[in-house]
Amino acid sequence: MIRVARVRVLVVRAAGINCEQETLHGWRLAGAQADLVHVRQLIEAPAMLNGVQVLTIPGGFSYGDDIAAGRILAAKFQRSLLDLLHEFVAAEKILLGICNGFQVLVQMGLLPGGDLGSGRVSLATNGSGRYEDRWVILKISVSRCPFLKEGTQFELPVGHGEGRLVVDDEKTLVSLHKNGHVALQYVGNDNGSAAYPANPNGSADDIAGLVDDTGRVLGLMPHPDRFLHHTQHPLWTRRSSDARPDGLTLFRSAVESLA
Image (cartoon, rainbow, N blue to C red; front, top):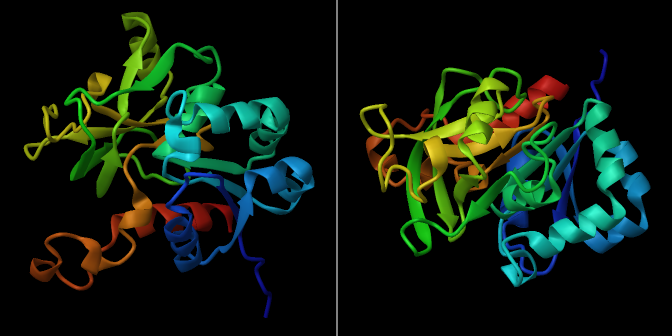
């Protein structure tokens, strides 16, 4: 019998990140070998990236979001690892940023990337002016991302204070759609445009997640790591025990694409 090597994942931690254990659990449930590494360890030994297929930046409040959400951690990556991360993606490996991790990827300029580099897209304070902690419905709007299947829907929780995606001008918003960078969008219960609270933060065009030109860099504000078991859904007692946990589906899709 031929033994297939397990997909290997690194989950990065730093001061203030608080979702690393849930993210590890998600990858392990999906069948990957997932390990935790501090950003300082990765900077000191970047060859770690050679032995893995996925790098994940989980949610939380890295360095207290002291300057801006994700900015300090992004600066550490930019200063020491940015070129290596470009090589990582070019080698057909995957980068995932969840919530604060999404903010880090945008701050680094890895998302949306390409001609829409750093500064044209940002994540700002929620339109409600408060921290939003609720479940949302998402439609998948991209076909080239290993985490996602175009045309399907997810239901995931959000928990953030700075998740409102903003752009510098209308041309940038058009380019995001035209070039296939819009990965996920919030939808209302009628599958139409998502007014608050269906769009919990006021993001432009209800955008909840982005991919780069390759589709192998994904950032999203909702938390797949918080929906790994069917009992985590708020209506789990009314749903079948066979109902898929959408967060686990996301992790499994990536593992299957790499395996």
